[in-house]
Image (cartoon, rainbow, N blue to C red; front, side, top):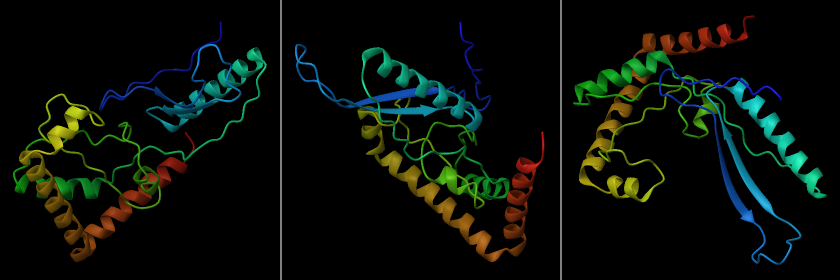
Length: 199
């Protein structure tokens, strides 16, 4: 039996590797063999290394399925998103303003959270952070009807305004405090150097 890749669990948010599938085009009748089909497949993992392993394994699975069924396969890779690297200087400044505005709880500042966005790749080029916040939806998960309903409440709007103010004040501090800006850049440089050093 082939050995499975190691499955890591993020100690911060509990993220594990996941796959998401969307069928874009396929047969519409059970007794008619479709000439073509299209599949959209997302692979996420707590680290870039683990993601690359899973992508390679999934690619072989697709190729094997095509070979077994006598089909041709055309694989097209989309945009890849890296881990999200939070800048400590930005995080501390944002938390300071958030607490001053009455924010009591902060979500884990985790690089492996499953949100997919371009800011992940930006964080490899510039000091970055990506805060998330509670909108009062209880256990409602994003991209669901319950979450959309929670996002339309006054409490969610007030929470968004508070976070927007904290972000604006963080930006103001960076623009007006050369030492803070230098620290943010220094933290980012130190991270890049540690990443480039041999392990």
